[in-house]
Length: 613
Ligand code: G6P
Image (cartoon, rainbow, N blue to C red; front, side):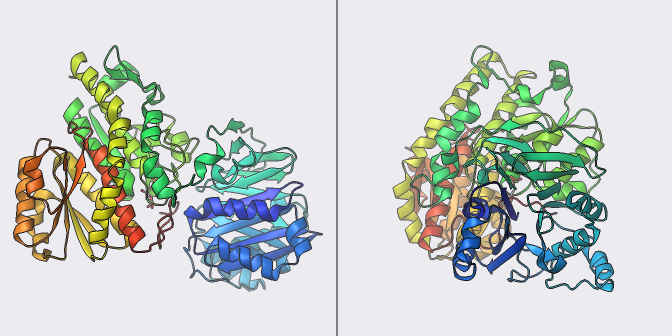
């Protein structure tokens, strides 16, 4: 949520900042801006709309010597919280007559108080944002030491922040700090790049330092010096980013979303690799860091997550209860915190988050830890806050996901949950034979998804038929119900069609009143236990003139007969059905959105990583 990038070194900062913003645009894209520092002067450019508009504005309004010869700068792409997405509210925000510039990700909760105090001391505000108060506050504390001024100001701040500050009075420095919003420092050859995630850094260096909450750092071209707000030096290890720069590029696909859908066979190979024990029929998930005794002592699982990750968690309920006899409660992370969850030492809280930064999920993690439960993180982004704070968990290893609508992360999450359920099941009731057969099925997931992707053209032609509709229902039963929710979420996120997911049986308890020939029902009719009953529900839709798009198992003529249109999937057991079904629904949503001319990778009002509560 909001992207920050900063550069200090010997090269032209403008190009590095703009290309960095492009990579971070998925975090927010309602306005953008940048501040360049050269000849002890700050040049500021801001623009509503996307980074491309900012680039154009730069060319038109900034002299070429400033544009081409500034070696220090900070930049921001915004997802509005306080104040409309106008130019005045775009970052950077300035103070000290334009001599100090600040970019911020997060929310300053006490900004109204701060603003009142600062205005009473003569500060003039030009925006409606919470951020501007922080810029003025830092400026009032600056008595010759920018790092000290930032630390003093941040001690007065309630809320969350990832910030970067430059000042014409302190050339050769960027000061950054974080609490609740990620910041990474990339260490290059006589240059340092800071960003809210590594995707803006990997093109320049793979040596990075992940700042932690409470850190404030002085950044020069020689790297970071990290301190606490109390000015005690802290040591932060340098890590190596394991993925290559082209992993964060489109690689010939029209959209990141399509690339990420097609990446799933390879991504899931990485998720599974080295994690199945084909001798004992179990999974090896050493990052969980649980002894056999601890595993055996677990009595209940609570899964906390938001959005697509929550849908994966809901699939998890069927996996843990079906394979390991473990009661499992998936909870929307924000709600979980406010309902006094009853937790103890024999509960395992599993936090699922692609980004590892979602504020609500992080708060649920802290709640679980504070109440004495075991807490594990299931994240994709290595070194992310949830991964670090839980200290135990399983990485998805699905590679960077850039498209705002989550695709490969969902299938990787369900695959990891399946491996966890296998491991917990083997320590409880699953025989070695049953474990081995599940291992074999998990190993086949990448190939089965590949077969679904071969249906791309067929799915595109079905999408053509329904791209003009205004509403759509997705129905599924049992383990496929969360997949119906996920299919509906994908469609509404990127095509703006009103779409709802229902338990197949629930349809007749109200929603059926809406059915007519203009409302397609996407029915998950996979040939797994419960199919017969869902077929009955699909018949009820046909009887009300609603077209049924049957997602079904190849060769299942019975299911074909009740379907107006058909998407065929390979035969699987119930446990892997959600993964391959999701891939088909992702393609359906993608093509509908494409045909409607929607901005697929950057849907309106959404952001990929939601770091505010
Ligand atoms: C946002 C995104 C969703 C995502 C959710 C949870 O709402 O738009 O695609 O599923 O956050 O994100 P996480 O990173 O925690 O999985």
